[in-house]
Length: 188
Image: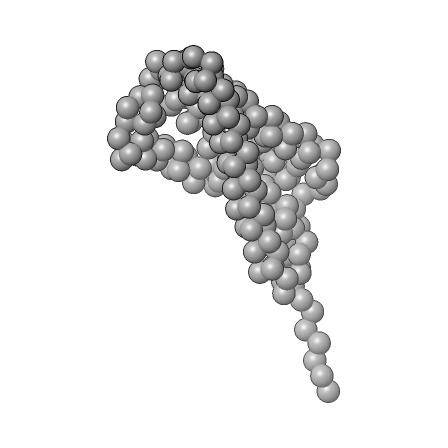
């Protein structure tokens, strides 16, 4: 948005509010849906929706616009994020004893943060390397940047698609169980 659409940092940041607000909304939806149909289908659907949003961004034109080219992806992405974040949190904490809930929660939050950082590192490295290669080959900066981002979004879509497949094949199908209270042992 800043390099191609010439948005200021503030305007670009405000544009991302769409995602932040909708993630909150769809996290609530995700919680209700997980309660009804279980973790596995909600997590797989969330990851698949994230993949679709990334594929939307793969087709961004060099001279695109926010309302026509970015906003549709900015609306679809938080649907998937809201569903996936809630489902993975419920799956990770399902069946955990009450005394271990803090540890389990800390582990899931840490893995999400580290995973996000690794994902950004991988995709930004891919985008920068591809953009640099195209610039050295004589491509215009706009098309080189856009092509680099296309490749990064394609890789991101592949990661999300793999996440959907993993959810379908490795997550247990039963509904989430509540955190089990730790039995109290009284001494005599």
